[in-house]
Amino acid sequence: MKVTKTRSIAKSLSYRIFGTLSSFIVVYAITGKGKLSALIAFWETIVKVGIYYWHERIWNKVQWGRK
Image (cartoon, rainbow, N blue to C red; front, side):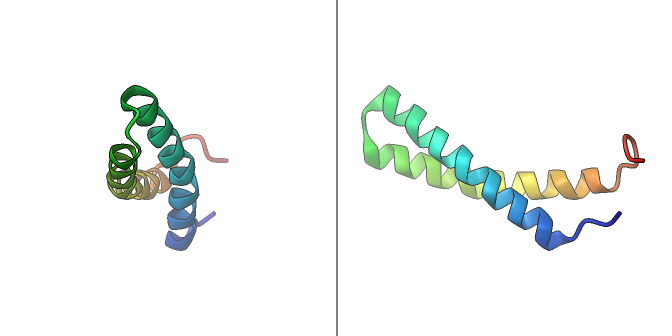
């Protein structure tokens, strides 16, 4: 079974939508500042999409747990 790079990118983006919303909510709950919450959520998304993409690509090379 081969997983395409496009699939990994799509999964990364869909996962980060939920992550971004939760980050915004947490920062807003702590600070009460919408602009700061949006800025942190934005940059967290940029960084974590890249991290998740490479994490997926590395795990695709691991045969452990596949049948």
